[in-house]
Length: 502
Ligand SMILES: Cc1cc2nc3c(=O)[nH]c(=O)nc-3n(C[C@H](O)[C@H](O)[C@H](O)COP(=O)(O)OP(=O)(O)OC[C@H]3O[C@@H](n4cnc5c(N)ncnc54)[C@H](O)[C@@H]3O)c2cc1C
Image (tube, rainbow, N blue to C red; front, side, top):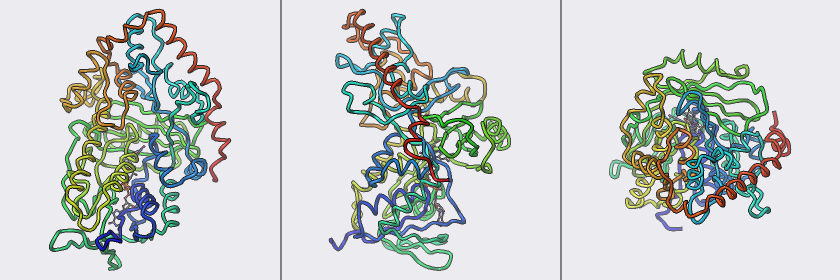
């Protein structure tokens, strides 16, 4: 091994980010590198973060996780997308499905043909062309079946909704089995090298000292190393995303769990509902300028559909991103690196993606600044792309029933988002920049769902004769319906996997 190779990694924090990092790094690096994770039970974790996006399947595969075992152990349900209620207008409902709509025709995205048919006056609802949306409404689920050539069953895309504390425990078991050492204790001091300013060691309350070559800061909003010790600044995005508080509370499940998350817009924010096998997770994300904590809790309690199972958990945050997620020998992951509200369940994905980027740019003890700069640039682009997508939900609205919505509908947007909306409004075109997280399907679902209507569609969509267009659209919608009819109910599918142990 190179004498400048990293030999000791210290992970600070044992929330979702800390255990994801420890599990992945130990799996990939093996026992050639010592990994120690420090966490403090007295401080605890945020204890939320229960809805995910499909990419988590890649992370599971990297860790060699058996998916059925994972579902049982984390009380998980399957997720086909998110239902948005009251966003574009009070009374509106739309579904943001995973997967795609219809199928490409004549080399064009499906939605141009759908827009043409809509302008002709004969189109079915957009959801009828998404197996995810259709199955979610019917409360059905199965994994994709690739054996049926051409069937929409092969295009099912799904994620999970799980218990965050069970997930951390599950990852911890795996990480410890691959050699990660866990140390319990509160870090009270951080020692920096007087020459290069790198973190040398952290000191715990009992005066023990833990040294390392590379530190992964997963200490949550505190940013113990990246912010408090190294002073990597924070770019505040709260002028675009003004919600700065949340209150979370679990309740008893009263019906079979739905295979989707629901996000319901409220006068001063929005509420989530995440159905798990064991319970339902609920939360109210709100803007403290317009709603007190007591009012938020009262609103949340009123929306619970079963008896509460936990005390309310109040959280404070600010939307934004660290100027540098990687500074010197410290890489911040999770809440220590930035925060975007959980409207599209993206935070766990951002952790996973940052771990992958760290592995791609894995350093030695020289800590090549070009690699670090590249890592930071990519991190920022990723955050900005997700940020724009989340802002879209607030900005594309006709709601004017409260100060929050009046502010959001008239706020100045990031140029990148403004341009995207302008292009869509003009001719329905959607772009996936730079392999960004959200695909054309996602942008379409939300733009259409929030009430943005393009003036035109792609001119080449006119090349298909009208009769042929109708025939193909009917065929696709029927194929979706038949496919959904063949699927088991979500509950039946969970029953086949086996219940979570109580
Ligand atoms: C309201 C809300 C809802 C969310 N919902 C979702 C969602 O649905 N989907 C999603 O993907 N993400 C969601 N997230 C984000 C998700 O919860 C986080 O990304 C994820 O939990 C990671 O948190 P973390 O590990 O970075 O921080 P934390 O969970 O805060 O963990 C920090 C760790 O650092 C340790 N620590 C801190 N200081 C010290 C110290 N001095 N000494 C020792 N240890 C220390 C703590 O003990 C803890 O172990 C949500 C976030 C919020 C706020």
